[in-house]
Length: 465
Image (cartoon, rainbow, N blue to C red):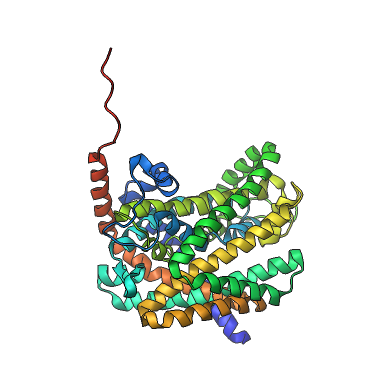
């Protein structure tokens, strides 16, 4: 097995080189320019649409003509459940430990341009979605590759890589393995017990399909994010005096080498840029094509409305959660300890307040399990595109069992397999985003024109006395 593992790792390293990272970042930059910085112009209204029902007097879409199975909020939470994962805790720590504080600057930049990419993905997902068997709404890159470009072969390739990554890669076994490691290290829980709990819990939720996943995500995801953000904010409040120096270190490290200090061996600008870009892209998944599968299931009146909600996912994941993690590492000084990954983040929290390490552990468990649920839906949708609905019940059972089995395995080769599949997902998706970007721009202009014409529903001004 060792030669196979080395081959898989080599393939993953080759696929996730500078060319793909440049393509991902370049696509985000192009969409930012084409859409006139929609992520900046519309961020606050988008957050209001996502979290405040009845924005500007308009109720959430209940059953619009365009269809959909879950609400805008549930679609956002489903996508966040798959995106907010171990990368927000372990991935950021790895970036800072290897690339220094400057890596956080490039990570933040990837969050900003990634918002435009996520917006475009969601526009296309809703525009080209279909009603599947039993009336379920299906969409995502495989559908806009087929219906938008006429590339059914590329749609099938994307679906195959998505189903593989979901079942055997980062969407399942890697996450359950992270749960088992965290529980074993912090609580002393045997891995097989963790495996049984993960399998049973996953099977129970998957039995209800996307509606069940959406309902669970709508409750689980806000709670777990608030728990983790509360811990990170407490760290920053208690170390507020160190924040200005941390911000200076981020800006300095982004454009000049970071000297060796403590157990940190030092890092050049190139390494800071590489680690920041890579971890930013891994964290928010902008351009991979996974999140638009959830966006397509949303009840929405127009593709742009769901796209605005969807782009807040990247803001929350990367610009908020990842950055707060990074700042916590810097203000506590834990980043120069020589540790890396989740133990580094846990050490940073624990050094500031009692129980900080348990907050990180519990958050990691919830983040990882929510990722399993979100990716289960992605894999199910991809498999239905390839083989129809008859395979779905068996797939759900297999997915839950594999999640349980993943707690007992070594995750090295599985991580590499998942990374390779993610890269192969990104290639056809990015081609579709670039070629169909005129469609995204047209739909955006149409929606914004209607918004300007829409009455504000404000009462007329009172006549002067």
